[in-house]
Length: 127
Image (tube, rainbow, N blue to C red):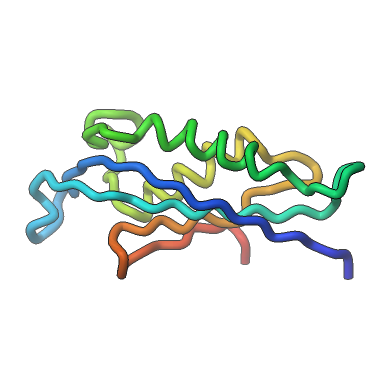
């Protein structure tokens, strides 16, 4: 079995949202200080022994998070159409960061999005 390297960075952003059609208090506008964990898997190292520079992972993740930071999510794409649930935000982060860093040897494996210190969702497209 070939070696795999699993790398992770953590960042955060703050935003507000309203959950459409939610039967409770989250149907009203409220905010979160979201914590984002980006997990990457790599199958090979470069000439100096690095799978992907942590700086590159942080840069891509922060660029995507900056689109959401200090915004009302319901007003920005794609959350002006889809409900800005933790699940949908995690999938958005996974796909957007993946577009920036995925290649033949490196792939976003998962995004874990913490809504609070005690509640998170992990999104992956693995079986």
